[in-house]
Length: 224
Image (cartoon, rainbow, N blue to C red; front, side, top):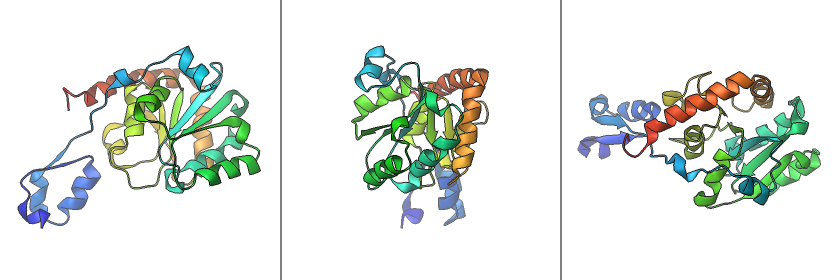
């Protein structure tokens, strides 16, 4: 029905445009790719915030934000920790809730990894957004169906370096090594290797942060 009656469609990624155009080739000229709006001013770096959530400022803070379900790659992050050379100087922060939350806690305990992790549970956006400005790296190893993943692009706008899989909108806007390092789905060894590289190559980390802040301007309300 929609392919017959719609005059103009907005989608979040070129993959979605390709998918819908497959139903009716004439739709391609009616479809536009439009990102979500991101406001980087919602993310504020502060010592008080780190103290509130027990995040040692001297540690390298690695962030995941999203639903706590297997398809988001949360167990792959956990299983990557033993292969990270500087893991004793790292904190892995999981923000979000979901069906696999208790299982994630149990596996972290069973594998002796709980001391490396901070499980924040669900936080409202107004509070959660500050994590993007108070951490060093986002890992988003999802193999779920994503559009314009807000956790990913909020990180970019805050100048946070990123590791993620080649998913929809990420492929449209992000390039390696300017904005991120690509990681493979369901591959803890790949995650560990990418984290090791990011920690070792300070210049890569610095350049990626600066590039992401500039790219984030693309998602301002005025530009969108």
